[in-house]
Length: 224
Image (cartoon, rainbow, N blue to C red):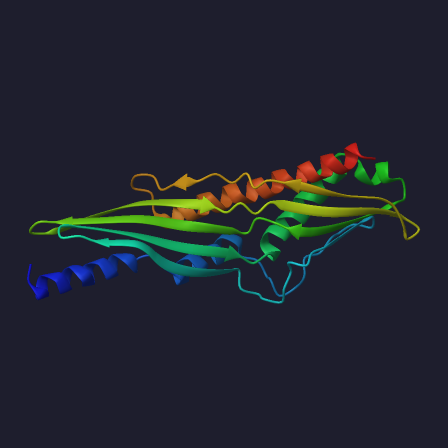
């Protein structure tokens, strides 16, 4: 293999690796949520308040970084792992949590069970990161052939919610609810676009945040 052939293959590899990058993923996340993040998460309730140390002033829906790992350049076979690590703005899952928590709490009669007492929640930890993992392969004899195994992988950040129940500003009960992240690995299906797979993964993620918010309600109600 001469230098020109090797250079052509290298350019081809770089071109493939640039197909999905941080800008695209950030754009897809922004389109999926389409939320105004310039304001703080709000609670529409006279008995409930929610705070979180995770909320910052940043209005970007997500921040994505790309890495290349396990680069294996053999004579007729190359292997590369591309990792796009996407961190969602904490306001996104917190907004989802608050909305789902209030709806479910109302259906469970939480306000009536509190009997005039107030509930203060602090979301201390919440899942808000995933990795778009691209396991890329290339082989060549005369021409180069490439294929990718792409998957979405969650991290293991749990949901941690601490709470206080107060009566006339006096704490009468407190506790912490910790729930594991239940997001599943999602593999890109044959002929499925990465954009559609991103939406599918985020749909699953949103549903799991909602499910965890309901479990927090159940835990609090069970302790009353």
